[in-house]
Image (tube, rainbow, N blue to C red; front, side):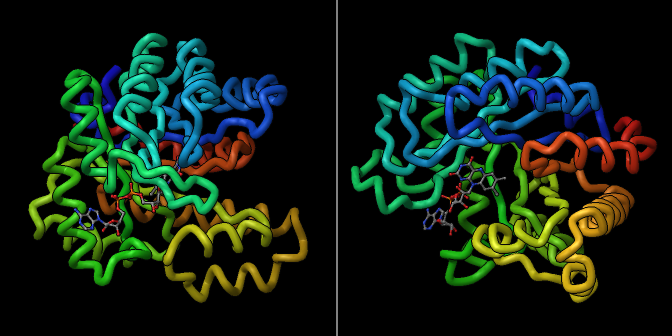
Length: 291
Ligand code: FAD
């Protein structure tokens, strides 16, 4: 099903992000993760893609196929364009279409020092435009950054560029993780003023162990609220306590966002079904509203 149509009927979507295994032999384990996640009835599950990945050994396509074959959720394939040619992207789109996947998150990807080849695309908006030209029936979504993208000179510039992505055909946006809801509300207001009217789903990363923090800091410029820092310094060395504190923090964050009428919640599951289940149990009653 086209994810764009889901936003038309449901007030809030609930979706998950998962990543493919690093080695092909670990697919069995990830299949188990998909089983446990799809029982929670997410509207869709997005599958990440390694920037500069190979068309021939594409684990994103493989994992999307597992989600599709579960018949319990819709897969959305992430697709990065940095270092890729039009021909390579076109082959990937064909592979996705062949397994019935037509929802794509179009991304530029981070520049990888190991990938030196020049690609045909500079920005995600160009990839979006290309996909909508060669596969007009595909639903394309894009990424956005409540704290501004790290390469942008200002948030204003970033939002001007985001509008270009929407004008190129992105039917919805998913945010980078953030921990302070006020940061998201400010961004949502600015996007609205800029004329961005597509649904914006909030990306939430539950911090359930202190090791995640380094990754979070490297990935986003998100503000770390004092309340979350306190939980980390108090419970960071105790895995069980940090798990409970991190799930509780993310659940409260989501409940507040839902009450502020966000279009959807996209959970960065880190392939951990237990985290997804705890959060799903905590917010299940809030998700049933229709438009
Ligand atoms: P773009 O939209 O192209 O923006 C990149 C920068 O260029 C921004 O600073 C923007 O303001 C600027 N810009 C855009 N257009 C123009 C223009 N016309 N002129 C001048 N400047 C411009 N990475 C992966 O490798 N794999 C994944 O699976 C993945 N999934 C992600 C999922 C989500 C929800 C998010 C938020 C990020 C994800 N990323 C992933 C990370 C993403 O690839 C990086 O953040 C990357 O640096 C930017 O990608 P983008 O698609 O937002 O780029």
